[in-house]
Amino acid sequence: MLEKYITPLTINGITLDYTSETFVMGILNVTPDSFSDGGKYNNVEAAVEQAKKMVADGAKIIDVGGESTRPGYERISDEDEIARIVPVIQALIAEVPAIISVDTYKANVARAAIEAGAHIINDIWGAKSEPAIAQVAAELNVPIILMHNRENIDYGADFWKTAKADLEESIAIAKNAGVPDTHIILDPGIGFAKTTSHNIAMMQHLANLVDMGYPVLLATSRKSMIGNVLQLPVEERIEGTIATVVYGIEKGCHMIRVHDVKEMARASQMTDVLVGKRIYEEEA
Image: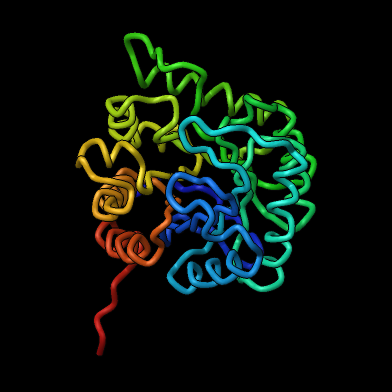
C-alpha cells in the first residue's frame, strides 16, 4: 500500500520524502526512570554516543525525552526537565547529523528545546495538556507531532470514531494556533489511554489514520501491547515490535519511533522495498 502524497520537509539538511522511505526515529531518554532504558543515557556524553550509534544504525531523527511517560509516571517541573534536555540537545546539534525532536507536552520546555536547537516538538498529549505548546510550534515555525491520548478509556460503541474525533480536536488546536498542515504529524498513541484490545483496534485502523492526510508516526517499540499478546518482558519484545513495524508500514505509516534502531531500520528497509517505496536495483 502506497500512501497519499505528502509534501516533503527538509529539516537540518535531511529531506523527509515519505514516498522514498520510512523514517526511523531513535528514542533517547535522558531520564532516570523510563520504562525500558531509564538511567542509561542521562548524562551528555552517554546520550551523544547513543545518538551517534542510532544514526549509524539508520535513524534520521533522534527523539530526546527528559520526563518518563511510563504508566504511573510523576510529572517533574519545567525547570528540571529543561535542565535535563537542553545540554543534551545542544551537544547533539553540535555533534550528531540528525533531526532532533523533543518529547514533551509542556510549552515552556518545548520553547527552551527549540531555542536550544531542536527541530520538532513531539507531544504525547496532542496539544491538549498545554495548548500553548501549539503556539510555540507556530511561533518558532517547527513541526509538531500530535499523539492520540485522553483522560479515560471510555470510547463508547465506536472506538475509531471516538479516537478520530480526539485527534481532530488536537489538529484543530494546532491549526487555530497557526500551525500549517505541512507541520502537523499524527501518532496513534499506542500504549496510552488504551487497553490491549484498544491498542490492537488502533493498529487495525492505521490505514484510516493515514487517510486523514498527515504523516503518521508509529511508536510501538517494546510496548505493553506486545508484552501482553506474547507474554514477554520488555527486553524480549524485539520480534513483536518488528511485526508491528512491518504491519504499520504496509498500512501506510511514514515514521517509526523505536529503541532498537538497527533491527527496526533493517525491517523497515526490507518492507519499504516490498511495498514499493524503495526500488531494488539488480547488481550488474
